[in-house]
Image 1 (cartoon, rainbow, N blue to C red):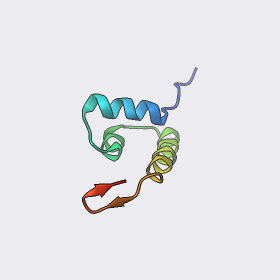
Image 2: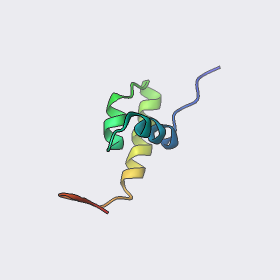
Image 3: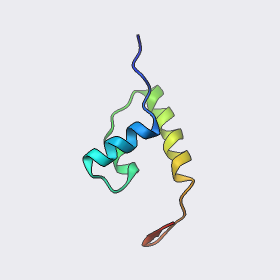
Length: 59
């Protein structure tokens, strides 16, 4: 049986546990296989597309 692929919710929980301010920091330190890495990239990009980031502010 193959392990369950991580979801955005999983990464957000890890982010919270580790105290990272950015999901990108969490993703950087989360070692994923090629398949789950591609899936995580897509999920993180979809999540980040919902934010408008300017210098010093996030909306």
